[in-house]
Image 1: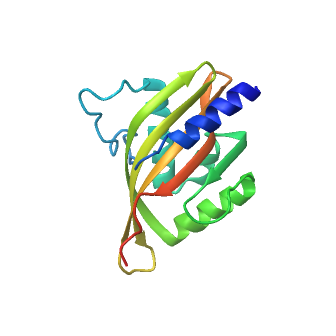
Image 2: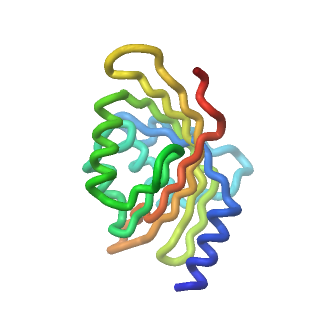
Length: 168
């Protein structure tokens, strides 16, 4: 297990994630196409990312939490890492009550190692304040570490970073 942690830590340091996209009714609706000649993307990991960002775009805390394992850590660009399910639920509910999100994402790279996998994902998220006002576009990256449990992939770690500071 220590060797796996060291390997995942090394991969997390070396890899840089990028913007993701979410879908409306079709989980692949906002998923940008993979470029010809790009590394092969594992279809199961790609499908997981599509489902995850679809739930994020819908502002569905229960749908998001259903895709996260019990020992998760989520790190957004601002604030402390989140490791508590209720804390994450509250943060997601606050976000969805404050803004309507439109998300586009692209899985850049995936690697599967038994019951562990990681993905680099680019995301562009447009936040429209529900109370009115100017929308804000965030261009970011994710390094997602997944663990397979009971035959399905779950999010174990998500490190999100901004590629550039938003305008304004």
